[in-house]
Length: 111
Length: 112
Image (tube, rainbow over all chains, first blue to last red; front, side, top):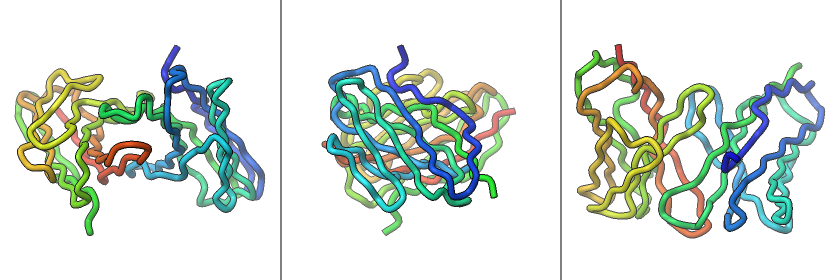
């Protein structure tokens, strides 16, 4: 089983719709979780951290289910500018060898 | 405050040539990383450093060497470039704990 798994998509979604992505991770000792956004030919940038209690940032909501080892990202009222690749990221041990990245889910918002 | 910078932004090499990629950070982070990103493969860790003077191998270290002589700089070297090393290379820094990583803008390398 891969450490972090995501559906690669692409997800084609009309503007204004709600879209949700899930991500599963294999290491139950993982300590911290993030969603990154990556635009074409650009570096990944932090979108939001994911907390056990769930957290919201504007149109974006992230949730963590430790028992089932999955993380979700919900985007409401999607905008054309939301088109990007969304990377699920896990910090396995809080240690030095960095974060573990999923391969990303490609989202295309259509006008 | 530039954050994380990478030079060069783009480079074309012939097979067998050598080059060094430079990553510089002004965030005083202890940890620095080099990743490569290829289509369908996601980000893969090449080497990393937990502090000045230290380096360690990541997931795909073969064909690369690194050095961290100064805390703010992390160098990635290709001694004899191969076409399989054509990729986009990202540097990242990390302060530790529950913090996240910050990425440089990337270096696009084409090996012919």
